[in-house]
Image (cartoon, rainbow, N blue to C red):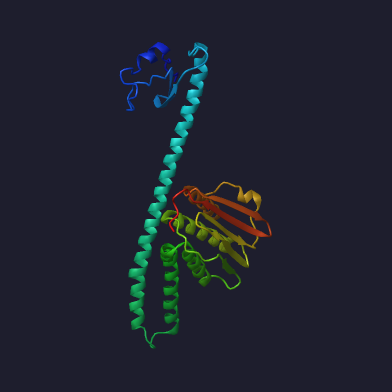
Length: 301
């Protein structure tokens, strides 16, 4: 719809507050320096306003300039609306992640405190009269559930990012085929980065390592990098089959668990202001690099 006519200089000057020019309150009245007001409208909704001041040489805005200002105002309004929509979508995604993590914690708690406890009680009643196959199955179920709980609820992350990542690699090594090795080559540190950052980094590394184990056919998956007071630089690198460029750049599909894993890593990285770079060469392997720089006054020592 067309924008309303812009007010004239005389109309704007009439809105000034000479009786209280230093008033900083947010009122409809304009400051004395304002010479032109341009509303920023998107369809029938006002999303902002431009306040234009003095203009050389005559302190006036010509009528022929108004169409250009209206066009710029319309573009600015659209940009502001898009920015606001992006912020809303990001807030929704972050809320979904928080809800997902809460569900993970609840499920991990239930499995640990209920199911594993019941299995522990059951083992007290298993004796030599029970077939060995049943004893072995009981032990295998218990070990498998402990691995699931460790993935759902990274308890060791409470002691720091390095400790959590080290435990993650240990847990994954327990359920690896013998032909695959994970090398954890990260210098031990005690820096803390805030709960949301540490959890996001943990989940990104978890996805990157699990993707490599499931899809790369690698003999070696190496986790290395540097954790410093103000920066995180982590790399997951494998010597597997690699990813074809067209597959790496393709949009995620509903039937592609791998691509959705990549998208989840990118989205989690974006939420904490980190950069995620994925490089791959067919026949040589894949490298996932996560880089995060702390904003001022964020790192807890």
